[in-house]
Length: 376
Ligand SMILES: Cc1cc2nc3c(=O)[nH]c(=O)nc-3n(C[C@H](O)[C@H](O)[C@H](O)COP(=O)(O)OP(=O)(O)OC[C@H]3O[C@@H](n4cnc5c(N)ncnc54)[C@H](O)[C@@H]3O)c2cc1C
Image (cartoon, rainbow, N blue to C red; front, side, top):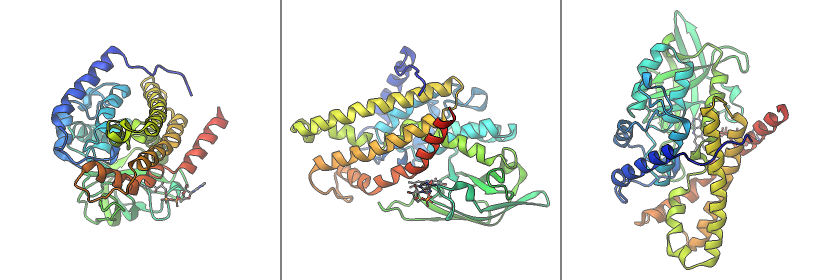
């Protein structure tokens, strides 16, 4: 991994202090539903408030309504949100990846139409990549877009699409020709498009953010196409790098860890204090790695292998820290508990196994890492 500074500058610390002060007031304890990292609750009002602070779309250029700030500055805001288990579900995907994808690959019209709304926290995106027979092997996508009389006809099914019911737009990968990689193209599909049906799939913790999305003779104008015909695979891969290297990959447990670290469970137990020390040491390493990835992005480098490396290690860390907290808790937490922290721990135990799957499984990341290292 390239060596880059993993400490914050004085300006970056000032931003951190501003965000902390704002969130202390806006998210007073007990006033919002606690969430596990990026899978926080969907709260469009909160997203709009955050947008009005200039803390969504921070890395997008100012001429498109963005903040014109750095990836590191965005990470500072994100760290504060995830530590509090903030309700970030509405804007998360758009802020992390769709906005940048549209900026890099979209037409001028698409940029002007969509990027300001993303930065204001008014537009939200869901990602339609996976299909019933195309998960790890994403190039096996079969949902098809066919150009007929100047419009695209879409047929097929997407699955595991997070937050598809609440998103204002879906960014989907469809097959436009037979070439395995160069036969794929991305499209922006507005919510409510006729012929698109979204059916929630109940998740193990009772939430309904997961969806199956069917396209039955959907018609899209060519202006819905993102990037060149056949360029979808490359665009999608770049998006996945944004999805993999960030702090959201190791911060699902942060609210629970913070709460646990201050609890009697730790105060009164030397073994728990030793485990907390182990957790903190690793956490600091992953924080440094994510920060160095953000600094590389700011210097114009797109660190795909490093991002996969962070996700591979940090998602396993999430699982291990969950096991430790659970062991020290000493009893089975109830999802229906009146204590929101106990309910959150129960939820983490149920959904924790999914953390190594979303955004690419551990096995697939190891393949990306080894192929990438061989090339160097
Ligand atoms: C919480 C969550 C949110 C998600 N959100 C979205 C979303 O918003 N949009 C979206 O499009 N998708 C989403 N997904 C889907 C996710 O990207 C896929 O689940 C993931 O890529 C794995 O695909 P699969 O489920 O089809 O499993 P499969 O690809 O069938 O894999 C099954 C098992 O086989 C292993 N395996 C497969 N191929 C290989 C190989 N070549 N070498 C070694 N091992 C292999 C895998 O590692 C895994 O353990 C989400 C998933 C989760 C869990």
